[in-house]
Length: 250
Image (cartoon, rainbow, N blue to C red):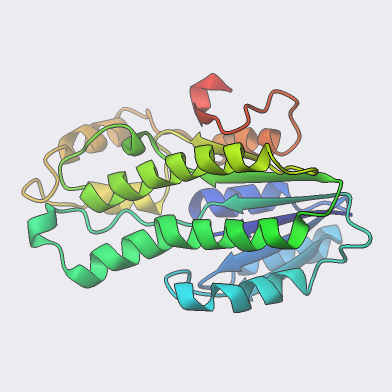
């Protein structure tokens, strides 16, 4: 059996990815704050297996317990492949760091960086002896390479995800049964996150008009299109170990 662990499946890109994983050859383990009834109902119609775990990823001290729940649904004696897609993320606070609340900065780094790090750690510990296909896809952002006014926490956390990906790739080289890992920047996707960005004031986010224009000019990528690229990364032989890739490189 093939397993995929997916965070942030309740909406946006995560929801689009989840829909594409609903078939008889895959078991989806969905981790999100809220259940997605559309995914649950579609899985029932298709006879697909989905395990939904409700969890707030800013609760980083409970990640070990989350991993226990996740792996309770996985029969390691009968697994053919297993993948982790660290997709969940938030952009807030979208304002200069001097005006941002400490709690919002902490939540951003917990969800965008620390949770993926800890989940990856748990994933590697529990699968290290399995001689099977193991892949980790970290959803990153071009913001991890470019400083953006008002996005200090988001840019920093995504840059951290990229470097973490590179470090794990180096570490896995030493293992007998290494996991593959990549960081994937999906471009500007038409999701609720983009709507949140467009609602920012120009005082807090000086580039807001550029993002408004992207929407008005129809230049946003659809979640379905980007989800196809993520699904391809689960099986493609063109997998750059430790790579930091953008969607236009696919």
